[in-house]
Image (cartoon, rainbow, N blue to C red; front, side, top):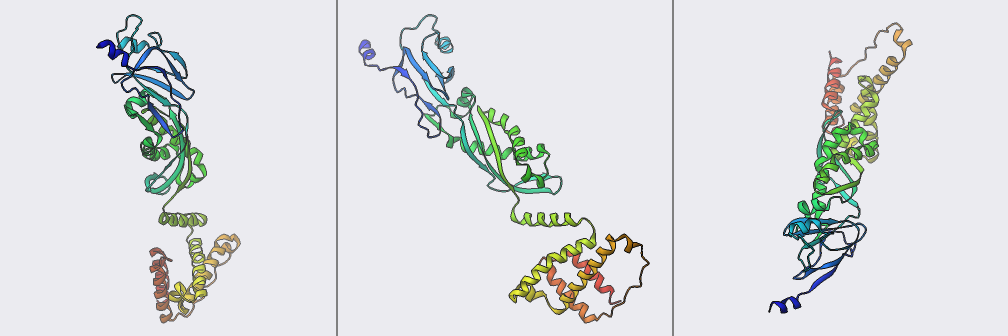
Length: 349
């Protein structure tokens, strides 16, 4: 009876894997109830690694090449099986193939803005995206940590894990790069290098080798981008209040003009006669102050007596109302409104 069972058994004499290009990282050779014939042929192609696993324990690892399976080519498995001499009978062992090809153009990105610390802006919420490539660097470690006993393990199965590692290390990468947020867009290569430095050891812990990573875009949410644009504008005029008022006035004029052209909007709500006069006065005063501050000759000239203008209290109140509307619409800040309010009220004294 035992002889008949032996005759009915099927033996494996060729072990190989032809990849299909479907993103498979690990593939278990189908054993079923078959056993490997002593002296069987093992073929491991370029960009492949074969791993023999005996009773859940990784034994021998084979790189590219053709092998005849004997006790000489299976030293670890021979030790585990206690083969103290050449074995003649077939044996059972799980055989896993791993693809070591480079997996390119893998996408990463921030599904939600992440918060980082920036030396210029403090806490900043940003978005970023790019791509990366990787390959299996340690098949034994990848088998024990990730793929396990599954018949097939693909790139898609690993995608979420790797994306999570990228996002987890972005904040540390920005901090270690020393690049301010304003400079990140112009130094994406430096940012990517800092990110790679953080990710290489993290990937290596699961048997993955990071080959390359790129940062294709770094951006702020829309509401913070508006604040950034204002700060850039302020950086152009510095801390000089006169220049700051000139800048704010110049920013407001196109909005008034746009509203005036449509017959509504901001102009319809806020561009009354009093506000128009006040805007003209502010612009003239700021231009005059800017010229006097930037002209040394004018600064050294004898001071002239100020011209006292006749102020109508009703015009002042109308102007204050219009300025209040501009503040409510976000054209003027609270500080700007308070400064103009104090200036106008002084004219009533």
